[in-house]
Amino acid sequence: MTPQLDVTFAALADPTRRAILARLQRGEASVTELAEPFSMTQPAISKHLKVLEKAGLVTRGRDAQRRPVRLEARPLRDAVEWLAGYRRYWAESFERLDDLLDELQEGKS
Image 1: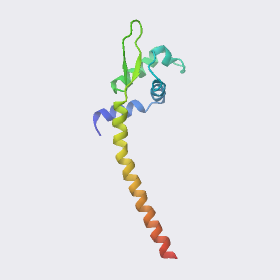
Image 2: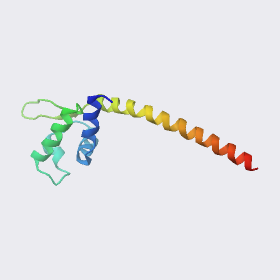
Image 3: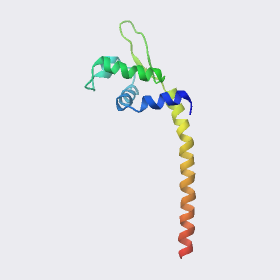
Image 4: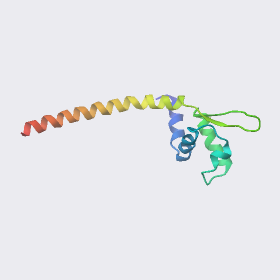
């Protein structure tokens, strides 16, 4: 696993940060808009955003007085690709187990 994946998974470990990312799937939002559903202050949300920024999961733009936060998908794609190898491994392991169980059942018949 790469250091970048470590940072990505650490950022995804927090439910508030995952909720922020889920909200950003619908489009960019301001810090105020992101803070609304949570019983947190804007500075607390900003701390979460800094973790997400460090992981490359979000970026902040500059639109006049506003700094919209945007979702960045690349780190998520990298995480999915890394996990896909494990999905294949376990799928193949379960197939082998199914085959073994079938053989054992046939042997009992």
